[in-house]
Image (tube, rainbow, N blue to C red; front, side, top):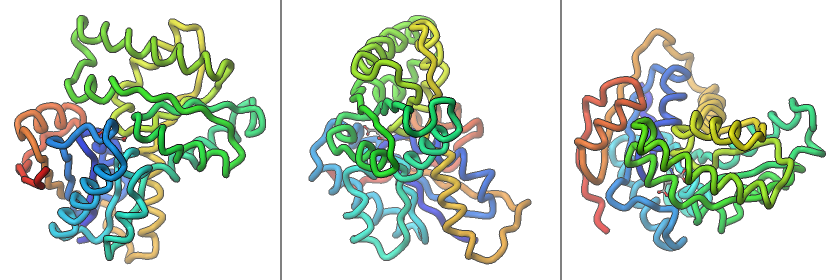
Length: 278
Ligand code: DGL
């Protein structure tokens, strides 16, 4: 059984794991949420590289033969350094995300020439311009909007309870209004942070209230497909095999279990606390 390491600063990377499980089931997954050092998105490049490389080493030490960087911030700021440091293949989320946008633009009425993309992401990801570069290489014009309050709202689970949800909707309204001021008529919204798919229903409500229709794309499914394509040279998969998941978090196991299992829609039985330093 192959071991795939999946890494995020928190539990947003579970959006990628959720897509991987049915697609590549005959696999042992080791997942690390670096919750003690989250958020990465407000930190400097040097710090993000240091945290991401140490997290990648931890997963390789747990037997990972392939690493999925299920974090846009770590991918945008540290993918080259992680690849240099690791002797195993490393797949990030930015390139698959940009390819998913290209496919959506091609299928849209506007086509690639007229499509305008808004990328919502952390401050570090937007500053890196990783998405603008990838999208413009594919002939797509985009603007990137930093949304620093969204990761804490998702990590706190402020998504359903009415008073919490009202705050999250207010924050989304402000961010989306500001983004649409910069890119009026934008037709594609890329969720450039693996935490944001958890906000999709609230983003849809906000866009509806703003009377603005956009196609929402996230990189989770596209990344899982990129992993499957990478493995397609491997021996045939046992499709009825059950994946095995082991979770590691660098802060509260209880919180990781509670929020993570609600999201993954399965109990996170094996969650271990790990200390990766500061
Ligand atoms: N989930 C991470 C991403 O995709 C961001 C979380 C953070 O700021 O640490 O960018």
